[in-house]
Amino acid sequence: PVFYQTMGFLIGVGAIFGIALVFGGVQTWKISEQRRRIREYQELAVEELEEAQGIQMGLMPQADPDLPGFDITGTCVTASEVGGDFFDYIPLGQQELGIAVADVSGKQMQGAMNAVMTNGIMQLAARELETDGPSEIMAKVNGILTQRMKNDTNVTMVFGVLNTDEKTFTFCNAGHHAHPVLCRDGQVESLTNTGFPLGMKENVVYPTRRLHLQSGDVVILMSDGIIETLDEEEIMYAETDKMETLLKTVKADTPAIQIQDQLVEDAIQHGADETLRDDDITVVVIKMN
Image (cartoon, rainbow, N blue to C red; front, side):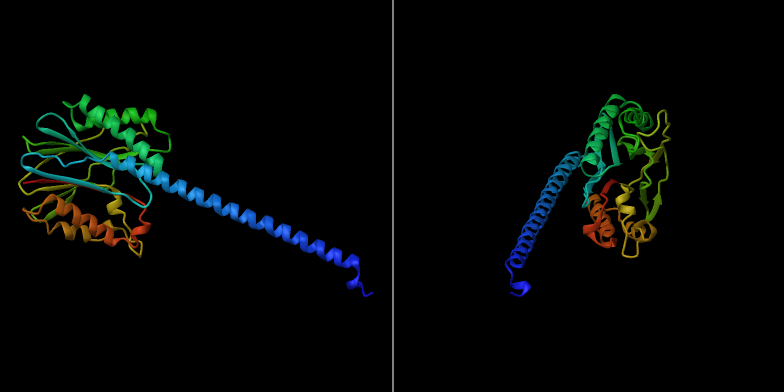
């Protein structure tokens, strides 16, 4: 018989096909297993993201302060990845209110847990040293964080004390390059006052700056998620005149929440793609009536 009609040839061909089928089945199983593991990883990542977002949002005040003569509001719009932004109000007696806006390094669960630790230390230090100024409170927080935080993590923060009797706002800036902004009589001023980030170096002195507020003044604290929002050409929001143009329209009777919402919306609209935004946007507006 012709070679390809022999029993040996047919058996050999059958064996080859059998091996191919087995190998193909193994490869199919491996691909299926890889896909299953990817789905599990994605589900775990989503769960961690949701848990971290819950922790982060739990740090935010549940209500705005009700202070005579002032209109105060704040918000944090979380990113597609959880960052470490938070803001807080800390009552310091009957006439003073501590206000903090912070950006803690780290993403997702690490950022959320660093934010929890920082917020707790801030609360304790402010209440322990409530008769002292923001500089002493900030130095206390920095000393504790320096001992507890990892070497590759830090916190930037603006912390100020609003005195409703004296009509003053006294604040420190710990490496927070999103400087506070003062809106007064149609003019916009960046309140530069810098210090070292928290948690990196001990025995740091934080200089203070005091504002004597006037009727209609608006002070805005924010995180770098506002100023660093990028458009399609990778131009930052702070590199345009959009924020200044918007804030110059603020009137004496403009509610604080309207100023907050317009600023957040303007920054988000400047961004190229909201789904790709990887940094939180945090804003606190302090308006003297």
